[in-house]
Length: 82
Image (tube, rainbow, N blue to C red; front, top):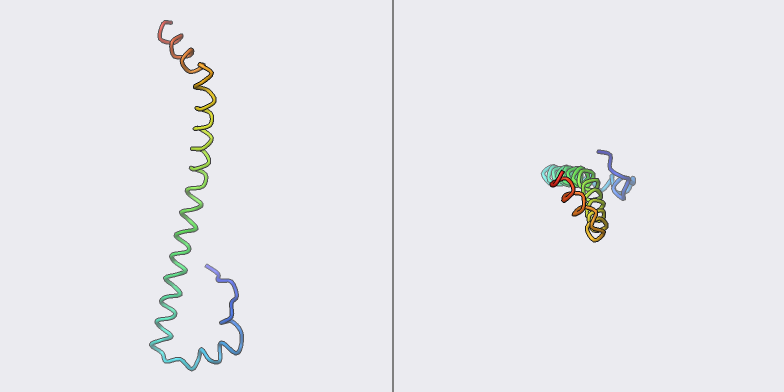
């Protein structure tokens, strides 16, 4: 996953970044990887849920439109007696 450029990509930030101790650099990289993984999971979940939510809303709206008109009741009673 490609990260957008931020302030740490600037030359002055990278110079100060190289002065950190190795343990802190590893911790920062670990946290950065965890955040990237989390954001990938969130992105995948949203891509999965949005079409399902849209279909749910559409079906509910169709049901609300059909039920008051009596079409569903008329269709089922006609099928039961035929």
